Image (cartoon, rainbow, N blue to C red):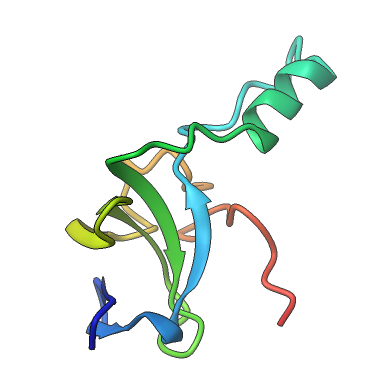
Length: 107
C-alpha cells in the first residue's frame, strides 16, 4: 500500500476506503451578522497548502467516522492522525456526538 490513512477506529487502511473531506477550516462562523461574503469565504476558499495541512477524512468503506489527519501534501505522508469527530474540543462537533461534515457524501 503506497497511500494509507489511519482511521482512529479501524487503523491503517488503503486510501481507496476513504473520502477526502477537504482542509480543516476551523469552526463555522457565527450566524449573527454573517454576510454572504463571509460565508462564501469560509465555505469555498481553500488555502491549498504546499506542506503539512490538517484535513477531514471520512471512512466511507469502513466504520463511517469523520476524523482529521495532518498530511504533508507534497509527499502524501500522514504526519498525525486520529482526531475523533466526537471529541469535546473538536470545533466541528455539533455537541451531539456527530461532526458537521464538510460536504454530503452522495455516492
